[in-house]
Image (cartoon, rainbow over all chains, first blue to last red):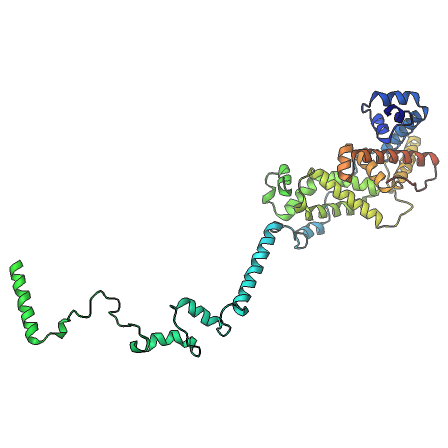
Length: 196
Length: 189
């Protein structure tokens, strides 16, 4: 089968190999020896190759010493260096993160989450203040009134002793009668004498 | 898989720290001889060769980030140059005279020089009339002296196809040289 094909004529790539002195299979060599048409073809190819080499046979053309200066300037331009930024994957991540931040911001401002009557400022106050019952009409003032109204109005202990471990049942020295104060002073003086 | 800066880095380890223009200069410096030779032999004149070379390097620079390192940087730049040349040919009207005005002025005698110049002119005219891919393959093989495998990589075809293009390029060249008055040839491109 292979020899039948090669009994016709050599394929182009084999001609090229033969012209360039690349070793080919023996069957191709045998065909070439027996086929006058292929031998003529081979001679013509060798002639053509000689012609081709003569066409530009005077060496490497002189290279341009300097390219157009505008080209180097163009390279440095934003248009030319538009792909010199972050890697495409990184650019995609940055773009997605930016888009997500914008969407979250828009949802926080105009989205359906939360009470539609509550504006952005009151939302921020709610996060900062302890949870309180909001008055529907004065929700913004609730936090302020808690700090300004008397204790009995809010129920909060705003006194400077709030949180003190002393019980309110312990008497202050200012609450003693003159006789009690005299007795307390004498008792303390006696303890000091005893300890010294 | 190496990226473009890494491939360029094989030429110059410090390329990643270079500015855009310095990286471009590095790219040009390493390949301008090959690219210019290809463009000159394909276009047949220095003016077009300069334009084609510059277009090649500008495209190469812009595409550096897309260079995946599948082929060598040289093959990649050659491929861009081939595309630039083929696009250039398809976008311009054919001209009857494409020979440079100043052919080589060397030879042992005036008679021999005349014969040599005539032969060169005829060959170059014939080459310029080959089908585009045959012509490009001939230029890459005969003048740029690339291997068939490299040509196949550049042209985006198999080695067998590259050899076949080369074969028909030589065959058509021989036919045009034998026929005398040159006519465009029909052939596989």
